[in-house]
Image: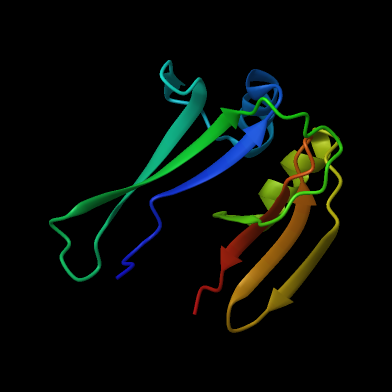
Length: 130
C-alpha cells in the first residue's frame, strides 16, 4: 500500500518568518511559494532503491493556518539527516537555538533534538558510518 513518504508539512501563523528560520538555521532554502495554498515549499529528490531509474520527491512545506496556534502544543516530529552533527550543532548554537538533548547510538548514529520558533519538534540524525 504505502511505498514512501510524499511530504512533510508544518503549519504556522507566520509562514515567512518560519521559512526564514529554517533557511538560516537548517539551510532549507525554499524553492518557491504556492499561490493556490499560500505555502512556502522545498523538495528533496532521491532515487528509488528497487528501481534507480525512478526519481522520487519528498515535498516539504510551511502552510498557513487560520487557527491561532501560537504557543499551542505540537504533535509529531520531523527527522532531518545531517552530514556532520558537530557542524550542524555549532551552527545552530551560533543562531541562539537551544539543543534539548543529543545522544549517540553506535549502530544507528548520532541524534539531536530541538524545537523551531513555533514549537515544532525537530530531530537531527547523522547516520552511523558503518
